[in-house]
Image 1 (spheres, rainbow, N blue to C red):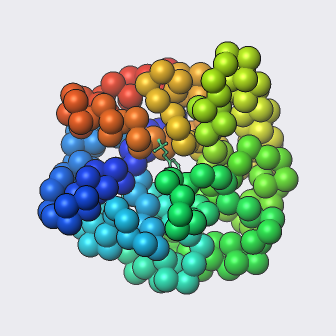
Image 2: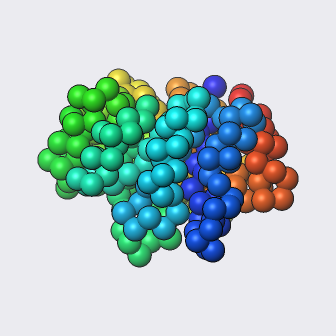
Length: 238
Ligand code: PXP
């Protein structure tokens, strides 16, 4: 049964729309825990478009479950991560103009920078996961970078518009999942997962963590945060 990491970035997106103090992502994290979240995930972006530094520092003190910081493999973020010491860092690619993290990290092309960042974080006792596309070469490169886990990007599965395309993408995910486990890496997955499409992903053997944001926060606007997390937790608990 995979752990559920709830990504609370969008709560900060609403707050930043008015540059005010509400809704506070820290409150959302508390309610997520009450709803059964196994982890809280937040992305501190270089442009600070949603999560702010103070959110991260406060959550380090208040979150009781696993705190997972998504960030780019850059010097400023590494310095902040080493100061805050979340339980896990997930390294993601970051482009200023993107709406969300659009593709996986190219570990092969950026190997030296990624490896240097991984070593610095691990030396401080922080576990590191790499967010990558469902691609065997990227998984093998991640293994060489010495991380404990990879988070496989499920976006192409989530975006598939026909049953046939979805099946093809699902089979790709199953295939790379087996390879991930063979490499001795922990298998995390995420991006674009919803109440409708999550069940097949949650039942892939050995998947140990799912990170889900947009769909949970969207439902939370209507039914409340705790309830939205509780419903997603029930779907992944299979
Ligand atoms: N995993 C990673 C690495 C991400 O960057 C994101 C988006 O911030 C998610 C999971 C969650 O994606 P979604 O908001 O589509 O559920």
